[in-house]
Length: 422
Image (cartoon, rainbow, N blue to C red; front, top):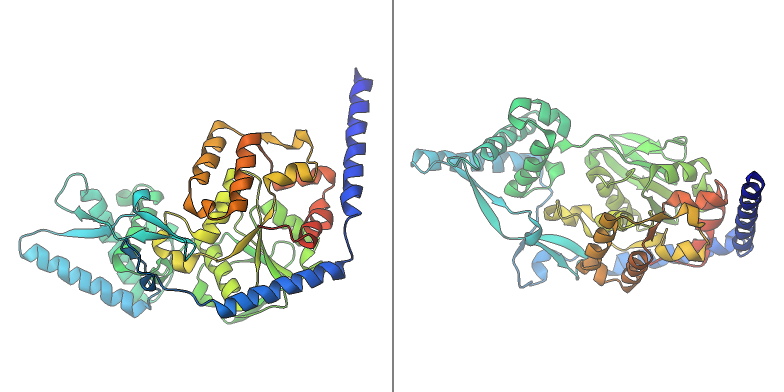
């Protein structure tokens, strides 16, 4: 029995080695791949030069929609003071006070194909103080607005965690204060970063990028394996310079570490960025800033599962939770490089490295197939259908079955050589 297991293991190792050699033999010299990437960069730059961003107001949509603006602190302060004055008048006239809060419910979202992003429709709801069901939310809203006004007066930034700890008994849970903070952005008509409230550092960047962070010049080729933490306040970032040919957006920290340690960005000049999972606001803002200023193509490397595609769509089309600020948070024309469902058979990913999809996975996959931003891209629809039909998923790390450096030495170079992206 033990001998049979050893023979099976040896046979599997032999197959793995032959697959590695098979695909490695298809690779052309790096100079050929670099030429393809230069053409891709040139095409992205030409597209950026010819296509000017269209404001929502120019589209004449049948449904009224709203967007927030990136306001200076003085404008946020005056808007809060005007709101406070109108609430005081309402109270003095005997009407009590209430907030008109734009609805961020799923039913109030709209995908706009011309912009390729999700926006917020114009429906609002009233949040009165003199109502048992909404008194707590009204109190939290008032308290958050008061704290934002203090930040405007002092011209300082705080984290969402700091904000929560100013009144733990009232907020009870940080998710409550975080949700109301987004409501306040909508009420005031400004981006969340305009409120001077930021999330803790999460995303990291490494590779061929130099930028200034609050006046200090940062060279991302000299930041070691860990890379440079993406500043939570995008206003601190400026003077971006790069000789990269593309931006590689990576879903997982583990894949990022492999790419950084192998210095993939030196072999194929690129900037590698990750939010280590679910995209945070700072990483989304930073990615958009790089794309718009450097005019580089963005290629995405995510897991072959519904959540990988969901994460990719948040970067590209926006999240429903923050659709009110999609104009500032989305990065147009992100190309899906891998790992795609069709890659599992194409690259002979071993069965033991593939995972069965759960019922929740399948539901998420089917729900994505109903989304307009997925339907717009036939390639995405084809890949998602294949995933749901096969009921199999795989992580980027499944490629490690062929060797720990297979990702950087074979898979990605071959993908780039074949221009195999959607």
